Image (tube, rainbow, N blue to C red; front, side):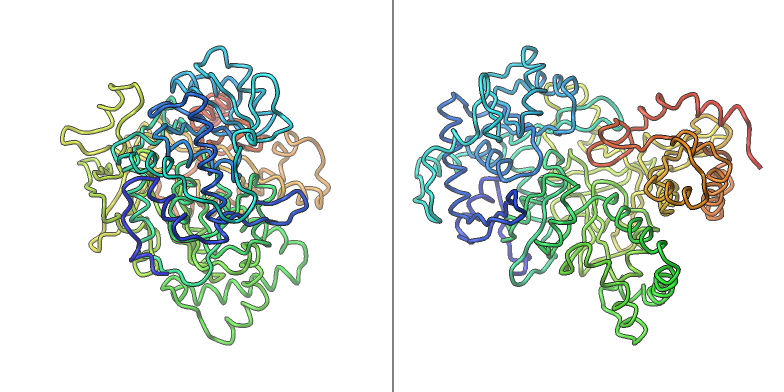
Length: 600
């Protein structure tokens, strides 16, 4: 199907009805404990959404009431979301990785009356802070976790027919169709990379407008499948699911990254929507395996050399046909594609900047990654590269339903139907988010080329200003550091200092076997302090420095013994650095780098 002919939606409920009216037998895939996948039809989805909505009404839920969802990706998430929105209520998605203390503020601030949680562990967190919130009901998806104070999800699905078909409920349909584009659909609390979390208010019209245009230049034919593994509490994943539902995709829900590789191999998705970190991890794992034997390393090096000569062809959207390419494809490239299931037609990256080194590497193995860009406040997509309109290093052209312009300092400003309604109960922050002419301030520095492609160069608030008055954009340099398979994450520091330095969290899955081969033993703290390990990373920094201007050069670096993660608090759930956390946690290490002076 060509998505150029897709309808324009007014509400998220219109998307639900489009799915139901299409009547597909394979709308959702649910993985059982034995690993097999059960298929849910459009009729089954409708009957579950309808029954759940009726139950929420019986609990006393009204239009405008807030419903929090704290869950990993699973079919119950979609049912809860569609049922909430069909009633005109407001979905407040919260990351299941948050601790109880972190859940308290958004639950209390949003005034949620109902919380829908996935497991006993999530229920325990909510119960710990429930007295500080306005929660009246807690629903738990895992029946075994239900008990005093919590309702089993299955109990709210009473009356769902066992078969593949169900009659339409006129009352439910009328209620859902009465919801307007201007009605609030969701309050999404941002992850706080640049300040305290804020409740972004997105209307039905905001979300539906974005869905109507984001994949309009993509063409699909035949049965289409995807794996939903990015957290649905993040706007990128939620938007992707809405858009793909509207295009007739079958969506397989994967609740954890640990199960992702198995899901990809069995579902064999035809489209991947991911964040850059997943692509980086795949590359690092491929390179780690290749280092296991001299023969594999030699084959990979040769194949990448072939790929580099054909990279321009891949980036132009064509498949190379030279004998060398075919051999390299048979020996190596197809193995990389097999990691994603082997049948992906389009690879889309969003949520954070895709490093050029990663993008080049994938192009060299025959995979063109189409990068997009947006924010929670823009529902989220502002621009995306498409099959017919692609430019390496850009985030594509703006969607037809948004306008953009650059402020005097290069900040990207946006207007359009998908721009949010404001921050929940915070008029002051809402006013600060817009300039005097009503343009939303993205906080990102951008450049626009003559053909209309947009490049994001860095976060405005994250630019490092040295004591010499030079501005350094950290993200591109951090991306180059992470191109080394031994680097897990990197964070540049040096604001108001004479020079720039880097904190590096190693990829211990690569570093520890490497150290073992060299008989370097000890704890991770001892490992990062070992002279040979420091020398190994010094070569990485030297290589990155060769591509930098004098004022950008990394004059010092520090290895930390910690593997940065969402659970550890160093990364947001969308895998972006929490710089304020890092600056506080490693202030002694940072101070030491600048007290020593420049390294030679």
